[in-house]
Amino acid sequence: MNSALLLHLRVASSRCLRVTFNNGGGIVSTKFLGRSSRPAISIAASRSKSNHAFPRAANDIAISPSSASPTDISPSRSSKFVQWDGLANGKTPNLTHARSFPIIGSAIPQLSGIPKINPLTNAYNFWIAMRNQYGEFYTFGSIMAGNPNDIYRTSYIINDPREFVKIIRAGGKFPSSVLENLWVNIRWAEMRGFHTREGIHGRGEEWRRIRTFLQTDLLHPDSARGYLPGIIHSAGLASKGAQAAAILQSSEEENGALNSYLDRCAFDMFSSMMLGIYTETADETTRTDPENERFVKGAVQGLGTAIEMIFSPYELIVGKILKCETSKMKHCFEGFDAAWAIARDKIESFIERKERGELSENEQVSYLSRALDRQKEEGSNVTVREVMELAFLSMFAAVDTTSSVLSWNLLHIARSPDVQEKLFQEISASVETVGHGKITAEVLSKSNAPYLHALIRETHRLTPTRPIAINKTVDIDNLEVHGRKMQRGDVVLLESHSQGMNSDLVENPEEFQPERWLPDAVEARKGSPSEVIDHPFLASPFSQGARKCPGSRVAANEIKVLLSQLVLDWKISSPITELENVRYHQRSVIEVKLPDLQFEAR
Image 1: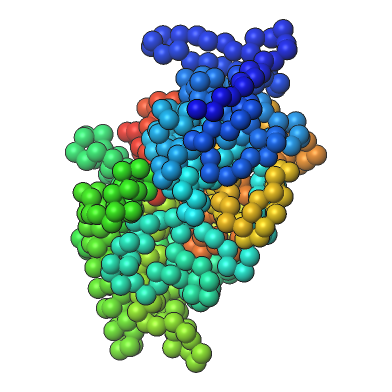
Image 2: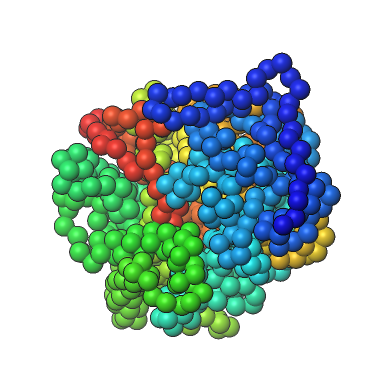
């Protein structure tokens, strides 16, 4: 066994480095105090064979599990940050390493020494604890997002979005995407013979062909804006069902009825854009096609289970490597299959009615109708079957992603009466003076509804649905990031949650204060270390670059519209006001488990 010289670093300061206390529940937690504080760490003079599969630079730091164990890091979001070199002091951070093992990477805390916090049920605490333990530039083995060509599944994690700009620029002609890591979705698409599999989950010319077709009539601001009238009408219908869903949940007739309600809201709004129809599934008191509800349930079941599998070492080995069907895989594919069967029937019927000239005016200007027109144009290189698949995949992905963002925004509005009242006053005034009594695109613009935009940004800071905002693969050799030369194939992730929770960058980070994103506050941060939180890479969950979510503008519009409609129609309250008492879980993104909210008609 290789011997290691362990140098324990202590802070020469009269202040206490570590404050340990009993929180009353028998759990001992720790706070680290002061900008210059560090946890006890170890610098290995010689490398252990089990740490990593790549050579280290001379200044690399290995965190020893024995000296910086998971119990040394407080899981509390309210604890002080360990201030490593980086964003707060402007110094270049050293690269540190979490221990990683073949295939499973760093997934097992007892082996790797990473915090003993489940990232599926406690992601926010997990990523803050990782940053506290390893700093603002580190590696760990990620079974979900690690380098697929590295048996240790190595990922580089950085906190500085300005450094990540280099990664985006070095993405090459065919940039990478997190979709490449969704092996469960890829397996299902292969088994079902999807023609767009490589175009969605791969790279190269096939990706460019499919992506170019998909984003046309979708990503451009004018295109997204054109769908707003249908989205606004759908949201008006959906809002009527909020109180019924709340009553259903509080009566314990349906666990999670409010979350399911938001899933259906997202489906209704996206259907108005994709198909030009008003499905009206959100309002339980309105009759609707039961197939629509089955689609929503299938999408939630399939995507949620797929994410659970991707995070599981067992599923990775048994399901991916050994290619065996596990019970979770069967459950996941049942959800995928149900949603695809329903969507296929709807889309085929739509195509037949279009060919007979029977589409309504709304259907004629829908995304699907326009896509079918483009498919028939001379020079088109996309088939009708591929158009069908793209329509399905867009509807499938739009359900729980949008509803998860909505759920967090709704919670913060409900638990913050003063914030809710400010939003109500702003939207009411804008509707009256700009919209002539109706919600319009102009009503929701940043110039007319700045508090709405600030509220959504504050929700993303405090409770992002994707703490790992961007996942990219370096496409060139010797790309310098934080003084370290990255090589082609290295996987780099931007962890975007801990910056917004750092009290040296954000005043009172635990408080929900949309005012911090209003123009005067943003202007006041310029030229200070805190201005980093205004970087566009930290502003939304939709990624960046050529692989940015093609439906991001539509989703952003849906969120603004439904929140505004709900606040206009209802005074919303929550029995839970403290975030520490709120539960959440990972679906395709992080979703809060909404408490029993109350909706009182205005």
